[in-house]
Image 1 (tube, rainbow, N blue to C red):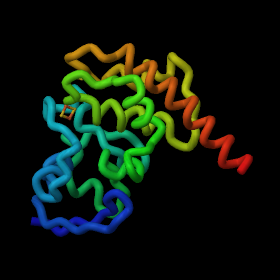
Image 2 (image 1 turned 120 degrees about the vertical axis):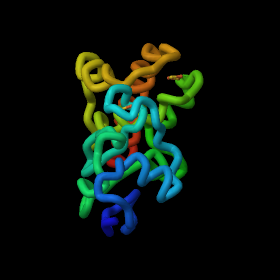
Image 3 (image 1 turned 180 degrees about the vertical axis):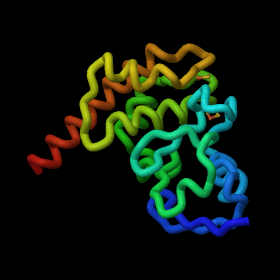
Image 4 (image 1 turned 90 degrees about the vertical axis):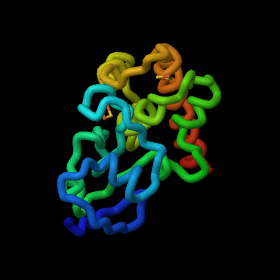
Length: 162
Ligand code: FES
Ligand code: FES
């Protein structure tokens, strides 16, 4: 067992786990954050996506020891009150069908939109193409990301003008 300290959703945590335990299981089984989902366990579907140091990463493929000293963000810590522009857009457009893949979709999109980025349609497609949805919600996901960009822009202009 190893003692591994990192930042999780803005707060310091320390876990005692096998160093090669996948981060996905650290989050779900050790820390009880079940928002991050298990799909394939092989880095193929994207539904386990979290942010590590601000970058989207597939937590099923990241050994716990690799996040020592780093900042990890899960869906539970994406935004207070689930008010991230993407979360608002997702609800407004009723993107989810069964919902299983949606956290991975949101976390992947959130990394893309970080720091006020305004990705082109091609950039959206490139970033999202590896996150699989068995329900085929891809058109709504794309629309919601576009809406979130607009909401983000509107929020930025109202905060700069106010
Ligand atoms: S569960 Fe991690 S990529 Fe599928
Ligand atoms: S909403 Fe069902 S798998 Fe994507």
